[in-house]
Length: 56
Image (cartoon, rainbow, N blue to C red):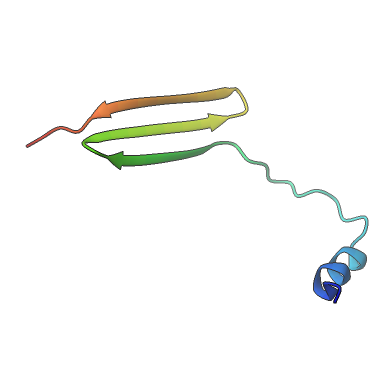
């Protein structure tokens, strides 16, 4: 059975302009085994760091 929703959506706006917004940056923070991993991606490149958790 064809996917009628996807077909109807594509056909209703075949020449829709691209959105004005674009992705500027995306990132993630993960905390595991006493370490914090931070990764950030931008159009300029990818940066990241791994730090030990501070015990209080």
